[in-house]
Image (cartoon, rainbow, N blue to C red; front, side):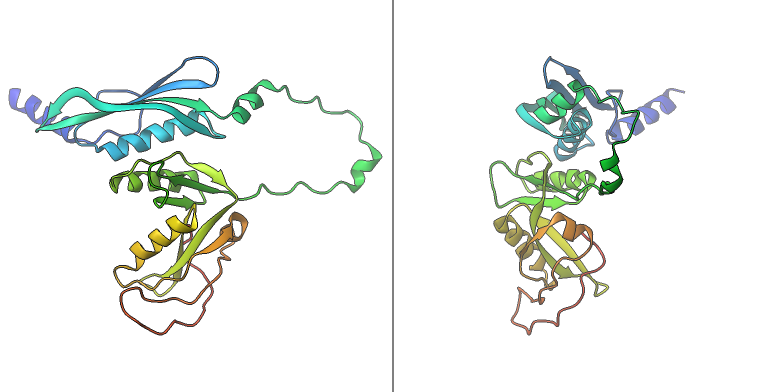
Amino acid sequence: MQRAVVVGAVVVVACATPYQQMGVLGGYEDRSIGGRRHIVTVKVNASTDRGTALEYLHRRAQELCPNGYEIVDRTSGNNGNVFDGTSKPELNAVVECSAEEWEKSAIPSRPRRAARDESEDDAEEPRAPAAHFFCSMSPTDSSIGQCSLSREKCIAAQGRIVERGADAGPCTEGAAASCFTFERTDSKRAARCAPTRGSCERLRVEKGSDGTLVSACVDVDADVAADRRIPSLPLESLTEPSEPTPEAPANGEGP
């Protein structure tokens, strides 16, 4: 009986902290401090790295502030416990929702009119919402950043930025980004995008360092990227001189 309990305890400790409200394995907790601000705390166990803890913090901030937020104060440390010589990371942050998000909740909706105006017969059909990039850039190094067409992929990119030893800024919406295309192992084209031309060039060089064929960076609107219409510039090798490959339609994986 005693042995089973010990084994069970080891299994629990070895499990990484999932994204959840604060529990036995850790998680997040938050509280409003008035106005547009919340305090968010993330605690994870020693089987979970600090980059994942930061990803959880930004994910909870985006749930609290769907239309945007800013980290106005952040501290990090360890939550006091050590397992197998590794401390357990802890993050605390003050999150401020954007003014637009706060004001939207305070504006009452208009009552619907009972009668139609004659001019409404000529009204245009409502349009689909415009696409947006969601970009994260290191606040300490403007050459490190990445953009995606969804918040989920942007959150994943934040974790990769932290793994590179840099701080990751919040995922903010933008109408355009700087993108390049590259050749996948199945010979199809895929794309990567970044907030600035400089950060795109850094991504491009890193992608091409293993011999992958890459194109030059080009500024792209989010609507164009969403329709898979990123300009297909000639591909080149950054590791050895070679002739550019013929232009081909950009398909396959997108940002």
